[in-house]
Image (cartoon, rainbow, N blue to C red; front, side):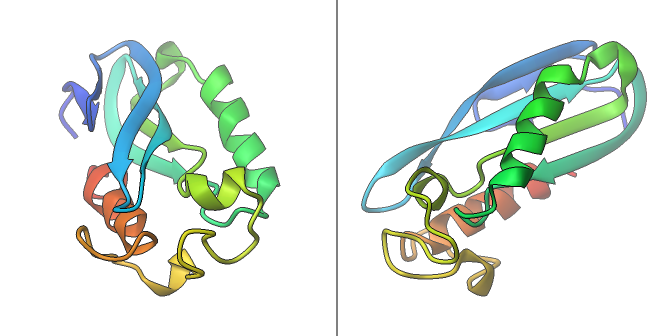
Length: 135
């Protein structure tokens, strides 16, 4: 992988930089902010994507991804890391175990998703089109 600027949505990190923020995703019935951390290492290497919070009841991975986001520094990284600790905000923030509160659909059943589709199909498509495809 080239040692280049790392981008996801509107977030960017130059080599040697860590950036945290949110990327807006249109779910049709509402717009949500998906938290993302970009860690662009000081040395070239592979690009890795870590997601959590696909299902609302799986809080341990959300915590682990958030902790990793806080601890990981560019000087420790060869390559680039994209961390998305809450991939499905409606389900996570409302504590829904397997289905989205927006449409009652399990996100794991709709991948690769559909950008203009139902509310749960949209974040599935966003995940594949942005952080996952970037790896």
